[in-house]
Amino acid sequence: FFFLRTCMRFASAVLSAAMSYVRMSGPSLNQTMLRVKDPAKAVDFYQRHFGMTLLRRKDFSDFSLFFMATLPEGQEKPGPDEEEAYLKSGKYGTVLELTHNHGTEKEEGPVYANGNTDDSRGFGHIGFLVDSVEETCKQLEAAGVGFKKKFGEGNMKNIAFALDTDGYWVELINRTPGARLTGRPSFQQTMLRVKDMKVSEQYYTENFGMTVIDRLDFPEWKFSLSFLATITEEEKAKVPPAGTEEAHKYLWGVPYATLELTYNYGTDTDPDFKGYHSGNTEPRGFGHICFMVDDVYETCSEMEKKGCKFHKKPDDGRMKGLAFALDPDGYWVEIIKRHLP
Image (cartoon, rainbow, N blue to C red; front, side, top):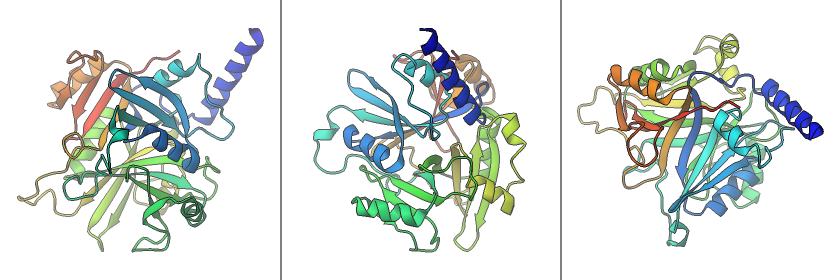
């Protein structure tokens, strides 16, 4: 018993050192949820092709959840006795939550929308940093993985978009040389299209303590990107001014996940623009992003005072103690409590 406890303490110390950028108090970006038709195929796809670890499966009467994460090289999956505490503390950083509504695996054809069609446009993609986009694409293609855009195609030739088993776009981006995580792919971003960049940045920085770590502008293609993260004060000190070459190099080398906001020029002033699709009405697909907080009730109370809207408040519905806020574009933002061991 003493030996086991010592090993667990050592593993915890290694993880803490390796993931010192993960905020363990205040809001922290915790998950991105995608609905999947067949969880066996979806889990295998992210395990086999992107090196993700299935941290935990949770089964309910009519749906199941699968939590997957990029763990640092050398970090083993927590044992059965540690899984729940590991998940509830947020030590792993940001996870990909795959939601399976029972029975969808028996349906014919595609079940969910990927967020990039006219009737579902809103969520865009998730993204992974890799050591070489070109080599990763060759490996994926050899394994029979489909692509929306291959390496060398289109305007941005150094990136690629693979298609997962549900047709969601998975961006591949070259890591900055010398990045803190190397080897296996690392979950780096979730992209959401927004109507007004300033309004959305303000929402996430003021309500969830996010930091804008970089901005990219592409006037030739009429869109801008903003990358936000929940990081420690120590990590913030390492972030170069947004929009600089140093910030770009930092962005493509981060060991944590970011929220990528995409603004297409003119949506904020176009009277005919009808907004983006949240993914939670037909056609469904993307579900939500999620933040861990110290106190769900206090966080929601403060947000209500600021005029923030909610799909579900903490005591509504069957699942008490968690909430779903609505961001300025109507995307669902889950708010859950952090439980430190």
